[in-house]
Length: 307
Image 1 (cartoon, rainbow, N blue to C red):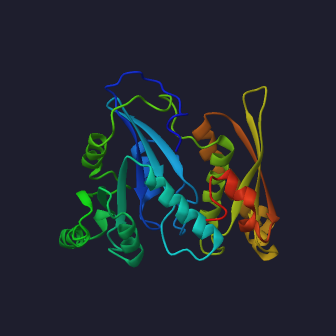
Image 2: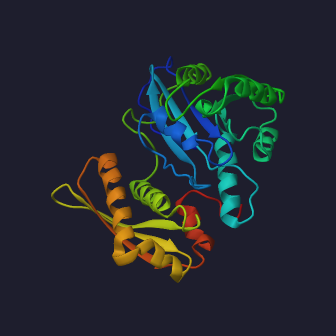
Image 3: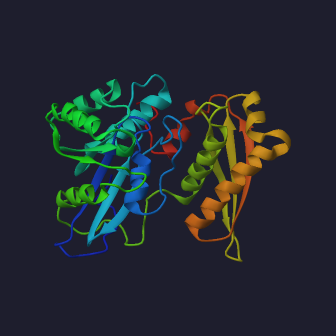
């Protein structure tokens, strides 16, 4: 996070601005929380483990303060190169943050991955957000809060639902109170620092995951090959969905190309809303057996290939 090179928009020294890392294990609701806090979709959300693969910034203005949220990949015990790179990205996102929020799924409780995260945050002052509170009884919430707070690293505990917004006002107030004084680092109308091409690829990957959740492993990738702004203010986008085997290519395409059409139409609808223009999306499916060993893939997403 290069704070010095970011653009400033408000010279007032009375404003506050800072980075807030959203940390947690997989599928605890970090991306849903980020989108809720920003008020727009900047991070994709699916039921798949490790949907978020790289650090995603979401930028929000609240009461004159600029809050730069950092959505990080879920932290777990990594086994493969991509896993290690994602976990490293998560810890990097927390390292330089002004505020750290640990998000925990109340249904999952204090599991082994969460225990490792807590150990890694030793010496930091952390806010605890117990998410999905509508799924368990109050007595369970209170016992879980006690379990977490025995660790001694949490300044405050919040019970929230990132999906429906419960408890968000109190969490936001606590975050703002901990921001350092300083000028804004991004323009007022900027919601994320993610390049358009990468954001478009992520949206298509989200739609592919949602369509293929039961049939395909998460090791699928999407790249935006071209982004052409036309004279009529419309945009032509060509993307490639990469799979590891020929059999997976047939699954993505579907009978008579029906599935790839559904992925394309749902992705296009989101992208037109996101970018505010008419968009023509063309999808191709290719086999790239070892795409997860491609160094350029990691570099484009800000991941450390050698983590």
